Image (cartoon, rainbow, N blue to C red; front, side, top):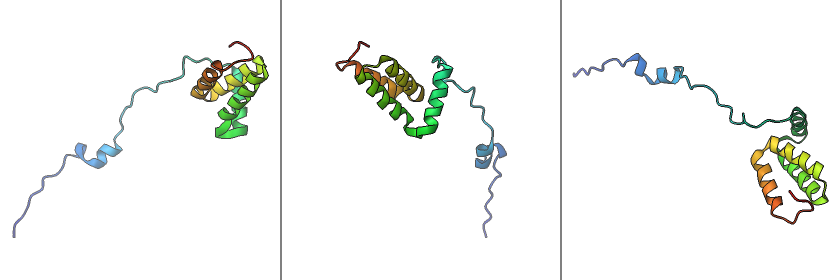
Length: 107
């Protein structure tokens, strides 16, 4: 009857040890540190998000578009800043898309 020898694995190389070991991933990065948001806009954006949930940015965009075509610059700026606080890419697409149309006021 043959006897096979299997050497013991190193504890530091075992798969379980590798899964459970702590790895330092470095410092967390703040990807929006350069963007300053007014406290009033932030509070309004949080209230708006609480009311509309994940669709809050789309609602803010539609209200900004409605104000844009109504010629109300102050409301347009307000709703676009709310949209920008919630979703920067959507706000940029909205502003760029409206800039190419015949606007009731110059952007």
